[in-house]
Length: 198
Image 1 (cartoon, rainbow, N blue to C red):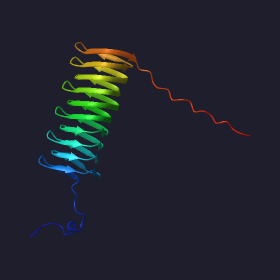
Image 2: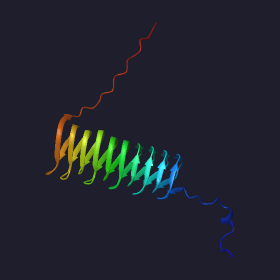
Image 3: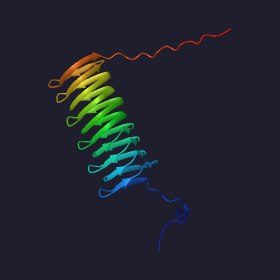
Image 4: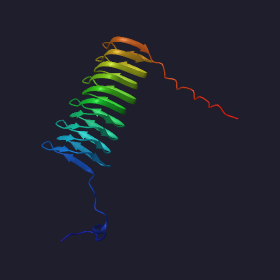
């Protein structure tokens, strides 16, 4: 009835490490593992996996820890990952801590990226604190902004608030409004030598 090699039936079964939460589904609980999670429905809980996608109709109420995250729905909580893309319908509120960040949607909260933040022309950020080495703004940013290397404001970009920078580049049409300070690298305190008793 079946053609093929008999040895293949004795081998370990292939496991699908993807979890899909459909639009009509609401789940309460935490996800932890090595696979990928795609949320099109509602998840009330924390996610700690390799990759997360929140679809256009998806909502996560909790914290995400992952390597790669794409958000096109809503995250009511914090996200910690290497690369994060917030698409045009994406909405994040709370804390964002990443290596690289692309924002085409909305963020309201605290943002820290080790390397780069790129805010697309549809991106809207309201940040009580946003810091990175390099920040490129083509959308709208309001709040406290710190760039340890370069803040670049594109032709459609606007930054309003308290701005702390090392270098700045503003294109024609770009807008800056608020107070501006020079970035000074924080010096680590010298360790205090303990007194040796004789």
